[in-house]
Length: 246
Image (cartoon, rainbow, N blue to C red; front, side, top):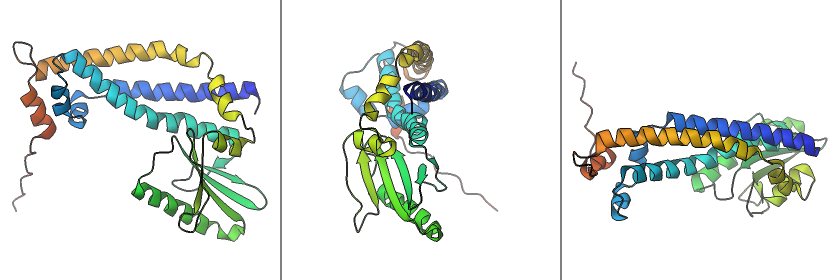
């Protein structure tokens, strides 16, 4: 892929990443966000300012969601574009690269810490399902989990049917360029800065919206935080559903 084409692909991926980031901010709801956080921790570290609590809520939520959004909106489409592969015909597999002897099925992940035991088992099942469907091709089936950053390289084993490659190794595998992982970040150029101003505007709007609602619902008449009300929302026993009578 030429540098100019890579810049276009990276630019498009960043556009989509920021579109989704802004959509998340504009659709966030204070109560749902409060239910996910630890009010005891906020109280323990001395938070008494509604604006401070809201900023912490927004920062924690967006930091968590950004990783997932970036994987879906940036890394996955980028891997498809630069590998010359096609969309794999299977859940849990993102890219398929096929030649005369080998069918390479690739699951693109962000960093190397995405799996727990259950999700790893599910990934193996997804690969096994695709391999079973492709037996008639009579080609070597090469299952690969590619981590877009970090270091985690391991071969397939008797109890794990897929290989794992991370960072430089992964991008070099699908592009043939040992320095491709460096080209990605260089190709971003000024695009993140161009998007940042709009994102900050949306962040400020979300913060102002949350602060206003927080003050109305979770502050006492003297302006102090009503921790009891927050705890009831976050941790209180939910009313049991009434049984229907015939």
